[in-house]
Length: 252
Image (cartoon, rainbow, N blue to C red; front, side, top):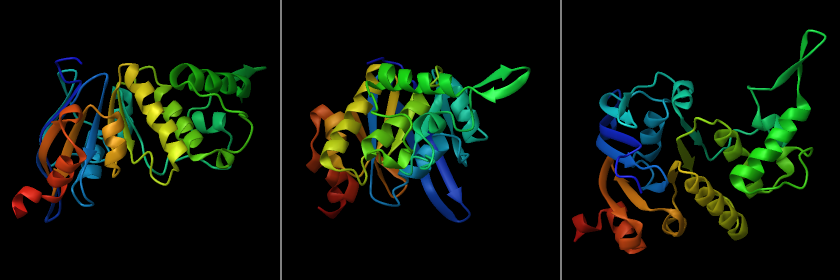
C-alpha cells in the first residue's frame, strides 16, 4: 500500500444551523485499499462522504487529493477531480436498459447527414467492454430493462458507470450490500475487490461488519459526529469495532 494518502481530510467540521454533524474529523484513504467507514445512524458517515464528494461544503477543515488541496462547490466538480460515489439507491432508471443507464446524461452520439444521433451500437459495446474488462461481469442481455436484473447485476451497472471515467481515483460505496441476499452480497464484495485491485481507493460505508471484515483493509469508526478510531482490519475484530461504535469503553 502506498505511504502517501490518495485522499486526506483534516479537521472536517460540518454544521447545519445549530446542529454539528461532524466535529474535527480526520480521514485518510490510500490507492489500492478499501477503507470502511462504520458507525450507528447519526454518527456522521453520510455527511462525511457527502463533504468528500462535493455534495456538502465543510464548515471548517481541509481536503487533499494526491497532496494537492481540493475544494468542491458541487458533486460534478468532485467527479471531474476523480472522486465519485455509488449510493444505496444506485440512481438507475429501471425502465432503461444497462447501456442507457451507463451513459445516462452523457450519451454517445454520431453524426448522420450532419444531424447528431444517439450511437446506440457504440454505447452497447462500451457497456459490454467496461463490465467485462473492469469488473469481470457479463450480462445475459443488454436489451432488458435494468429492473429485470438481480441486485448484484444492478450494482455492477452502477459501478461500471462510475469506473467508465478514466480519471476515477476514489470510489465511495454507500451500503452496497443492503437488501441483497447472500449470493448477491458475495458477488458485490467481489466487485469491490476487483475495483481495489485496479489501484483505486475504495471507501465503503456499511452496517454489516461481516462484509467490512471480508473486504476492507482499515476501518474508520464514527460516533456522534467524531472519528473515535481507525484500526487495521487484519489486527482487529468485529467485537473491538462494535465496542468502538457503541462506546463500550465509556460504559466500562
